[in-house]
Length: 128
Image 1 (cartoon, rainbow, N blue to C red):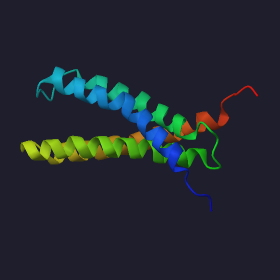
Image 2: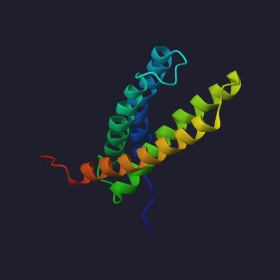
Image 3: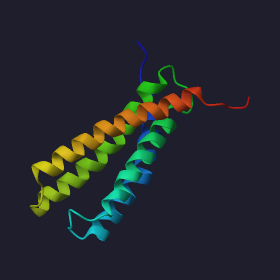
Image 4: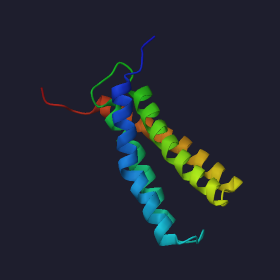
């Protein structure tokens, strides 16, 4: 059984946070509490790109299990982000079941995208 390389997992998680966290903050500002705002599409785009990028970054140095590293990297970054976001909503008294379930679905989608990023890192061309 292969072990996970925590340095690469951390690198991938930070890659996710680099794109998704600023987008989340920006959307919170732009939407100003409006759940029907089209600004939320920015978060969806950041999630798509950021999770794939984080998976790629987590598997870039070709660990023995690149897809696993990509998935764990993306999931770790998104779980950290949504833990802070949902905790903030809880403290403000604005946490809803819908928000928690939406975050769970986003983590699941992001994990799948991290797998794709890990696969891209494994199959990518690198000059010697």
